[in-house]
Image 1 (tube, rainbow, N blue to C red):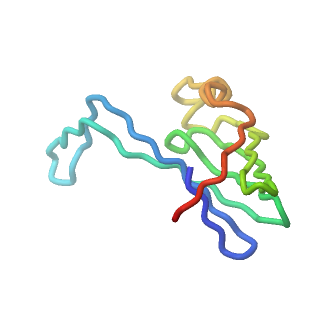
Image 2 (cartoon, rainbow, N blue to C red; image 1 turned 60 degrees about the horizontal axis):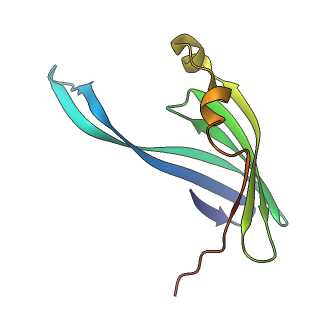
Length: 116
């Protein structure tokens, strides 16, 4: 996860890759084979004091998610998932977003990261 703050607003991105056999239709009618997808989810929300409320979509916009971020005094961050909801794409595909997202911890502490 990558966090970026601009004053009272924050965006969070989660980057992941997926190996497999994928293909996309090109505008010229040909098919483009892709062996690995590089994907990211984007979320955003307000920062107030030592906390932020971030919301957005995950998994190709199939799921809506909300997270609370707490910025701890030791420079670590506690991330708590507060809501998960199916969007139309998940319903159409027969996916259950709460089951997919449940593979991740509901609350986790991200340690302090230092760049020298």
